[in-house]
Length: 323
Image (tube, rainbow, N blue to C red; front, top):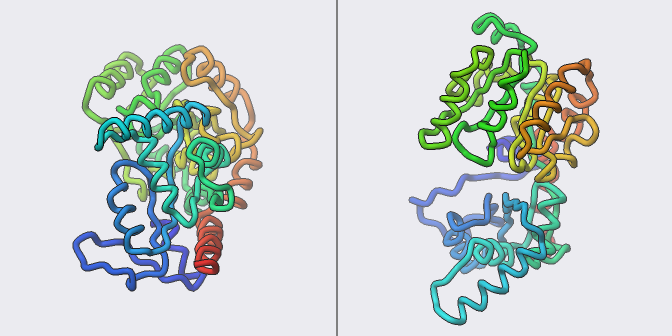
């Protein structure tokens, strides 16, 4: 939706796909599909059958190597010869990307997986980064401070219940850091989410807030009011919340996996997600550092949604020039 919002500036008319309305190949010049997985496979197949130029933002990442993915795809193809209807997640992703005229990964790391793992031609691949709303640059820290009585705290924002987000390990790392911490996110009921809630409740200096609307001024204020933002996930591509926090002026501690270094460079602290000691040490080092403006200005210069839209529009025009 944020990419869509800035397309008018490039003289591109964008419509959201409505699955309940009649749809033909004359209704658009390009179909842009976000995510290449089992949930989007049948839609992608129908768009391809209609012969509409397909652009795909695959939104995939794996800690498996490209060589592992190639072997998995080969094994999947052998299984299909044995029996119809045997599909793998990798196989579905590979087929969707093969139909696309253009594949738009969020990071170079993702681009390498798409090219080397899924066998997509480099000529079809253009890296389009994730973006961030400029409003976070103007966030007001006083709103959060007034409501919760906190400032210069450690902050994490994301879903509380997905193991990839690694919140339980983060809470255990925060347990022995003598500094206020805030975790904001929708709490997903289940074994992992419940464990996060129980663990956080043991520590008075950790405040758990069950979700703030993404468009709320309070969320933006939390970013501006914090000292350090921490996102020690198994991987991120690159973690839009970390971009938002960095744009609001926070120091960033983050996983090194998923292409995060491409966005944050040497302006962030990187920690091993499986190590409580690494996460704790990274947070403590970051707390000792002085806030600067380098990361904030870098994000504003490179990753605002209007910059992302401009690169996306250029990719669309490249597709249309050869279609």
